[in-house]
Length: 261
Length: 246
Image 1 (cartoon, rainbow over the protein chains, first blue to last red):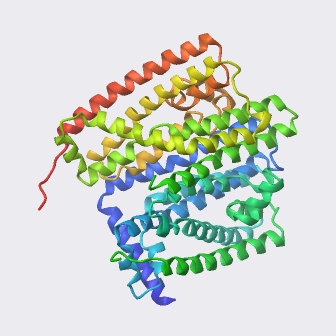
Image 2: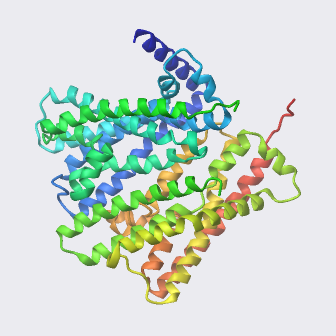
Image 3: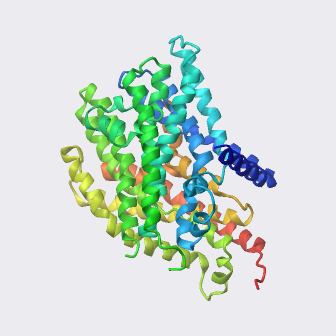
């Protein structure tokens, strides 16, 4: 474990040095990405012009959900986007072999090699939204909910990574598969709470493809909606999907023929 | 056809955001017992998802051509690079549209009576014309963006900002008519509304005078985008440098 941590810190240092080589690009990137979270506020405004409550959520409570989603997006894009984007290219160009030959867990290496610090700037507008929602919703949120909030965000991060990683693995069979692009469409569903839909959609978003809970569970915790089943499910889904991604990766490796074939 | 699974997979999951939005707005309007609004929003999102899926996004291929040095090869060919790029894009899009179109038909049919089609041929034709103009306009805008690679070696952030901004501000993700207050009125005058929103609104039924006004503004933005692209292309050629390889 210590060895992997040391390796990861080396990756982080290397990526930080690379990004800061071009400070102008870095600053521009941070400012540009900072603007992204502002646009979905148009949707929030449009929804709450039509109704005061949606699925039991008031506007300021929904701010906390949208803000949680933004923070989670920032984490996903910072730690995993570039790595997962690169995987189909490695397969097409035969560079995956070099990763498989290294004396470390290949899934770890492929998933964590690069860190994109500019993407982290999205977390700030998300955090501001959560704070605005918390202050204006009159919920009187207890202090102990905030560290648990971070824990559930981390569960959401693991769920999101696991699903995305599994979605990109079919590239080994199909060579070109823009699963990366359509993942963003799937991931966007996490912006909404499953309760806003109800019925079969709620079940799909919660249990079949649990992207619906990655931001909803932390927001539920802050808005005092989270019950034991929801909390346990977040942990079970995170651990279960991470294990499943590992098994699926091993299966995919067994079907990979390498660049020399 | 080598990448047919890619196109099919991509199409299926590009429909997903439209489905989610339809479910969301249906949940809002069902509570209000407003079937007319449900029909409006369902038709809007089905058509908008197709327009969103098919509008040209050419900044990424141009970026890669510049980064990998392929632009130099194309500049040596006895043909206009912008024209070649445009028709290459049209060819690719046409084929992927043919493969993916049945998915959108299935989506429309699945919506049942909530998906409302025009009752004569003219909205179809005008909507198609508006889409063609928006496609060309989008090509000029995104190609100009792609040429940014010549000045900025990591323009991906700008590309994504354009993608996100154009869709949100153009009505691809939320109908402009539902935007809060003055924002919707202001957004009608940006070019993005004429990329995504205008073809959809024509399909859903606009008075003829408003269609003419929409075309006039759209053609104005098309002209401006063409002029802008020409200017950026000239500047890009002045700036572009190629170093001989081994």
